[in-house]
Length: 183
Image (cartoon, rainbow, N blue to C red; front, side, top):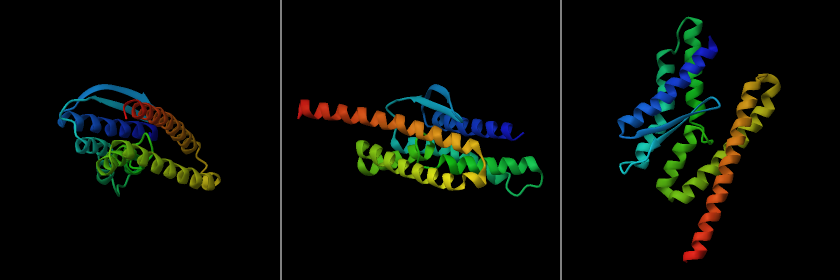
């Protein structure tokens, strides 16, 4: 039962991204399944703005938050699991760690404040710091929590963070080549 609630809650989360993107004029390019969720890519158009992107990234966590409010303080066990699962997904997805929604939101806010290049770099390092803290806290609590799924999720986040770091290094090298060539 808990697994069904979890999968359904993730589905609602991702559908919220798609629906809000569609309402804001974006068109869906592809949906790809990744560990514990989906990766949604929209077709870019001239009407895209950073603020619209932030709204789309917020749609998933907000849908989980609203579901958790509806099922808050219910009396039977499955309604309590719906509340807990959706609150957990809301908080988890707002963490500023790649590939979670919180990192994308922070990235877009930093893009507004510092520009595209610095925004990506700043959000990456903040995400890495947050992931280090999460890893440290979990390693301190692993004996008490006794939950291997959290451990696997942290490994997944480190893997994705490593992928992003490689992408950033490639982009940095490309910028350096362009700057040397044209300036």
